Length: 420
Ligand code: SAJ
Image 1 (cartoon, rainbow, N blue to C red):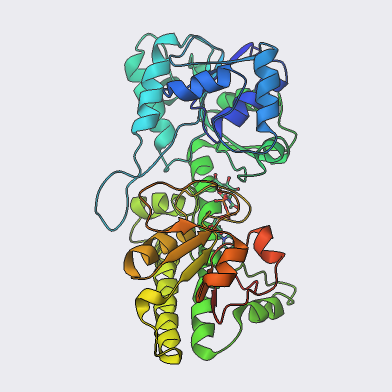
Image 2 (spheres, rainbow, N blue to C red; image 1 turned 135 degrees about the vertical axis):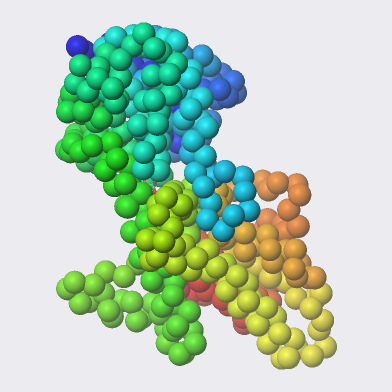
């Protein structure tokens, strides 16, 4: 059965580009989001997130009538769920995933499901979430059969197909990347492949839902562990008076070594989050993954400590000055280079913490951001001004604007990215 209407639930960083790609292939796409502002923006042919090329694709899709956004699901032939899977609010040492958005999405589509529909969970999820979603659907629709009870004979097909696109390159990666297709049955997988092949040029590789869930978590945990290795090396090298970037580039000349780059910590909504989904399910077994999370999460404190030491050094060398006279300039706030995304950004948390701890002025240079939240205790500045007034520079994000300039003319520099 072909897919005439496709519904995407959750029009955020993944859902909206995915909806737009189907629409660009001239499929009727209905996007659903609880956020009225997002819905209105999309229906005007505009976008509410920052992602290169997406504005154009959405504009064309909406103007040509292939994409519309609404707040309540309508009947469709396929439903893709791309809602957030954050942590539960708790103070426990190991954060627990919160599946309430998936549950709400399942309950919202249940009334409009019909025999033959395909439901795909795209949200990054702990192992077992797809089976749980299928069960919520089954409870809501006792008149329909689901694969966990009826296998290949089920009325509804269910699969987990995790997104794996890199923010900033989403439009290209959605088309080119291989997809992991985790159907609850072989039939579920083949229908999911049929759907993705509408725009995916990469290979669609089939497995079961649990392995697909774990594959996504494994990819991001692997990167987290590798970055933790680089971050640990940077702390060791600092103690041993070795330049960690020179060290890594030397080690990487070995044909089987590829060490990643250290930094101020790990940010974003994926790599700093997903490993916890493994740790919370298997806390006794996930030792390396847990330790990596701790190393990356505590790197910002190490950087702050370095700044405190630099302030003490500065005051020793300038005995006529007090701490209140010392101006700190932080370079970069985003969670990684050349984007404006501040979510879980270690650069942002370091700058904010410094502005709260330090009695003097803290300024931040962030070429990708024009305004700050009014509650921040630091102010935005530019490269020239900070060079003129700052006593201590903290390099936090290797944006292209910072790589293009020479080492600033500031005596005390803490360079967490090794560009100066
Ligand atoms: N980072 C380092 N050193 C490095 C590389 C990255 O400190 O050598 C830091 C970055 O500065 C940033 C964080 O890690 O703070 C994460 O950045 P990233 O570029 O590694 O990844 P994300 O979060 O933008 O996107 C990741 C991708 N996953 C992998 O590369 C395995 C992407 O493919 C996923 O789709 C995305 O997570 C997601 O949505 O899960």
